Length: 94
Image (tube, rainbow, N blue to C red; front, side, top):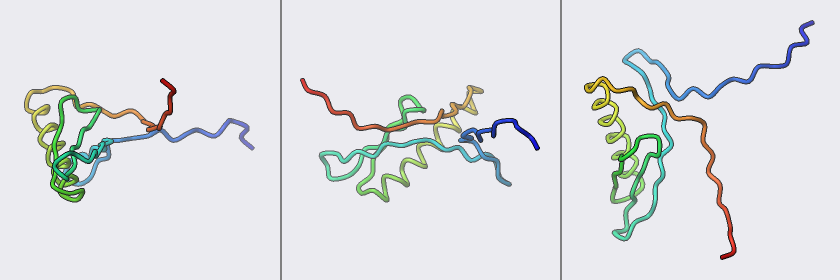
């Protein structure tokens, strides 16, 4: 019987498939003043896109992420790997 503590599986945001790698990133969808959504991806600095509704914003975000990664590959820059994240709502008295 092995008494070693169980190993924790680490979070892997990059998965290989038959055509290439699948990258996973956290995206934030925020309702904007135009009735649509503005999308940011914290792990990819400067990436901002928007869509006329949530479904369109999701499509635009995937396209923007794909283009961002392709640009990094062409420039031979490292592709950011997102660390495990948490989103918390905090209340403060000010």
